[in-house]
Image 1 (cartoon, helix red, strand yellow):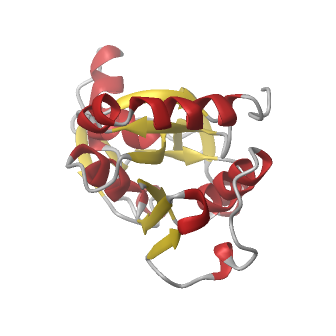
Image 2 (tube, helix red, strand yellow):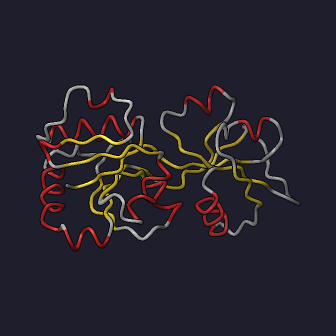
Length: 207
């Protein structure tokens, strides 16, 4: 049985749709279940539903053979997993944002984000030394209350930024969801995994 870790929410829904297009017989109530572990014996598959940042942890430690994770998570976590396939779903991008016209503090510039590794690497590559402030939610609040000069966050439609009076200033990277695999599982179950990859690759929407 192949075990696949998937994040809840939008990625899960789009991944399930992709699996169904690839002719995997997932039950109709699959997306409505509140279970965290769902077995699909007809396809010899088990699904673990987790938070996005935890998916790569489950795959790295081998409790899941495969996982579906956003490229943002893979860039931030840098875990020992193989990236097999760009699924071209849940498209968005990582960006720097702030208040319109606001300058960076010249003495102690601060950037708020839930992606400290990505943010620190990006600003270092720009030749800028900044203090990174890690937040777990409501990142847009940071410039509004003076906690930070800039934020680094995921942007999909830009609506949340606009509703909070912020503007996108720089684009860091494009993000889509990827199929990842545990290296040991890939060696042990390579045939089954390659068949899954081939079936998904045949129905992936083109960008």
